[in-house]
Image (cartoon, rainbow, N blue to C red):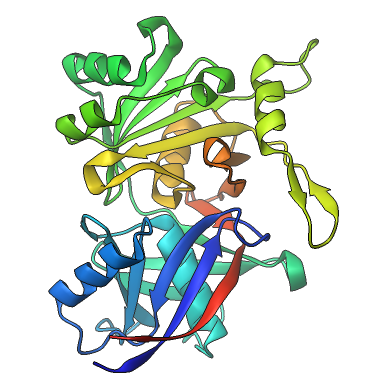
Amino acid sequence: MHQRPFKQIDVFTATPYFGNPLAVVLEGEGLDDVTMQRFAQWTNLSETTFLLPPTHPTADYRVRIFTPGGELPFAGHPTLGSCHSWLQAGGKPKSSEFIVQECKQGLVKIRREGSGSAEQLAFAAPPLGRSAPSPVVLARVAAALGVQAAHIVAAQLLDNGPVWLGVLLDSPETVLQLSPNHAELDSMDVKVGVAGIYVKNAASPLIGRINRESQAFVQNEKNDKSIAFSPDLEVRGFAASIGINEDPVTGSLNASLAQWLMADGHMPERYTASQGVCLGRAGELALARDASGQVWVGGQSVTCIDGSVTL
């Protein structure tokens, strides 16, 4: 066992402890799969990553991503949090345009946006495979979520490494009021991402917006100021099948949702999303599709713990 540089990063937030935490072991060489998995179980975070030298000539670093229940080929908030950690530890990209991460899903481009305290990282969403879900499976998922068929606007099986059943519901209020049967979702071995679209400039305030603002208006005690965020989409991610009943903020899910919802005309080419409200978090994501059709998923990250770990 050795002392290895270690960080704990809060991702998709500029305010510590309001995003999705990520454990990052910056020197993962020499660790076997069993040790990595055990440490990921011990941290009990949605993901723990291990940085390694790249094997691809154009990659800047390689990452392995573990949940408490197993390894993932790709995940969004671990991508941004790992890149944030790598840069903070002195990593120098080979390219002046992108940072290139190598993971089991392949190569992922990451770009820096903004500057100073407003700087954020954005990853290029991997190619998406999608298909219509089985009506039987969708009906079982709806029952486990506690929603009627009339609440479901659209649904797609989304695969960008992780596989999610994406469900677009009729309103953010419906999304925020869900109280899923996690044991049933676990028994189905399905991860479910739900979303609801905010209607802006409506003649009367939406109940969903009022509900969200009452839950998500966060007081930043350190600076004694309030943080308000007016998103276009409300998202929740349920993943009991990998040991996480509800994920605070999910980059891979938001990436696949954006690719689907933009392609089918449900969302514009640029929008913001909120996730984590029902867990007392305030995750903020920026989704954008460029002229080439590439979707980018961005957000800020902040380091909360910086030290070493014995592994």
